[in-house]
Image (cartoon, rainbow, N blue to C red; front, side):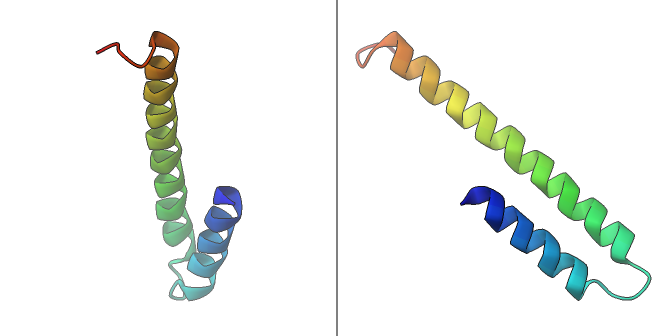
Length: 58
């Protein structure tokens, strides 16, 4: 589901980019994809660490 959302945003961004700015727009979208992936990985790592430690661990 998340992958298809990113694909839709990327396609829509490419379609809506002004003439001559498609490369810059796609670069920004790629940067946002990377930031979103990094944030998701950090969140999942925290959840996994907390789950592994047990429910009463700080």
